[in-house]
Image (cartoon, rainbow, N blue to C red; front, top):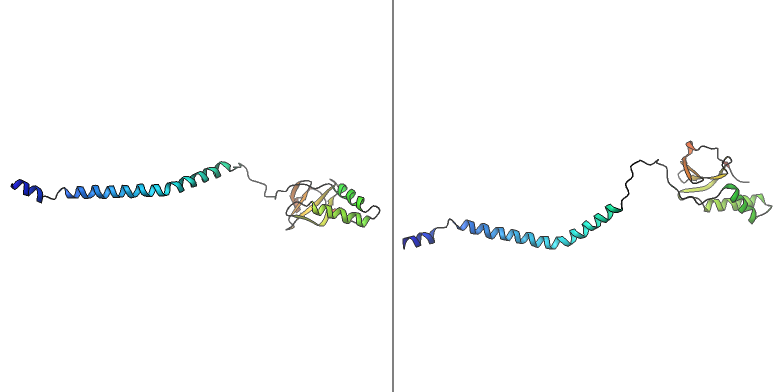
Length: 154
């Protein structure tokens, strides 16, 4: 009988039982957290994957010049348009030609100071900040423009 009382009074295995219960509780909390968060993480990882596959990586640096979409004509084409609207009236011809050229100015450029390049026959647009010229679908810094733009008008 003495052995039974000693066995019941012995508490050396109680710590093991406590650790088993605590570990089971922590594992249960981890599983519950994973169940709540996994849908959001899966959605976010799909969005990241889509974004990464749609990225374009360039292996060279750009020129630093603004890019433009060219939809303009030559100075002669604009002049012919103006002459068609105001035949025989040189001032009105240039007015209408300049209006048409202004309407075709690339984004970020204007034709407020109407210029044309006599060597190429292209109108020359000036950037809104005054640092660039655009002509014939290309862009140059004002100091690097290869031609000599001249006033274009009556």
